[in-house]
Each structure stands twice: as C-alpha cells, then as structure tokens.
Amino acid sequence: MTFGGLLLTTYTISGCNSKSERNDSELLSADCQTCLNEIVIHSNFPFPVHKRKVKVRIDEESSDFVKMKLYEDSDENPTLGWVIYRPKERKLANVSGYLDSLPLAVDHHWLEKYETCKGIKSKKQQKEQIALNLD
Image (cartoon, rainbow, N blue to C red; front, side, top):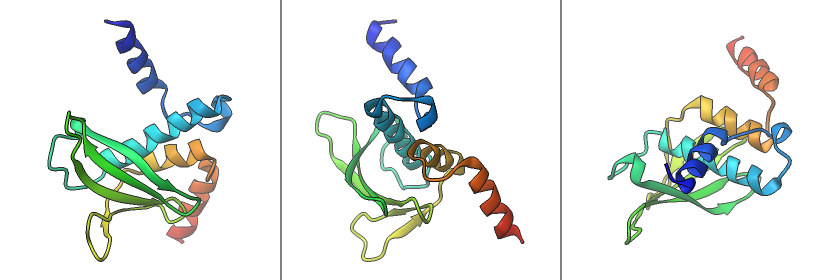
C-alpha cells in the first residue's frame, strides 16, 4: 500500500467527526464535505454512471441550503446533475434542469452525521423531535 493510499484510507475512516472530536477547522470542513458526499451517494439520485465514479462539489452554501454539482471522476469531468440539500428541513432534491425540484430519498444515518458535524442538532434533540412526531 502506498503512503497516499494509507492517507486516503485513514481519511475515509475518520470522516464525519463532530465538532467536539476535532479542533482543526480545515479538517472539520473536510469531514462535513465527506458527510455531504455520502448523503448524495446514498440517495436515489438517478446516476448515469457507477456511484464510485461520482464526485460532489459544493457550488453554493448558506445556513438554509447547500447546492452541489455532481460530476464524473474522469478526464473530461462531465456534469451529471445538481442537487440541493436543505439541512433545516432535512431534505435533498434533484435540481438538474427541472422547473420543480424532485425530492430524493436519503439515508438518515448520513443526515445525522452531517448535522452532528455542523453542530445543527444534537442526537438527543433529534430523538426528541422523532418522539414528538410519533405523538
């Protein structure tokens, strides 16, 4: 295994850590980016290529939304589509050239990791919200 491969493996395993676990803001940003990547990759977006070839780049980010470009990891880097994630609503949508966005199914495990990473909600707050919704 090459040194670069070791770094990649370590990064993948250590990705999506919460603020309390990391002090370096640059690494925290990379961890949160990893969470966003996983949210998109584990969604039901209609990928025209194998998911392993898909890369995600943040195009625009605010407290209300994160707009991301999906592109193929190849020499040509063709755009595969666009998605928007609204953390306050916990919703991901395909906004690739549609007049109306198309909702996408998401893996709540990665939503929780991203929220924890960004300090949006604690796990206790999430459980309380779920309990309230069941009543």
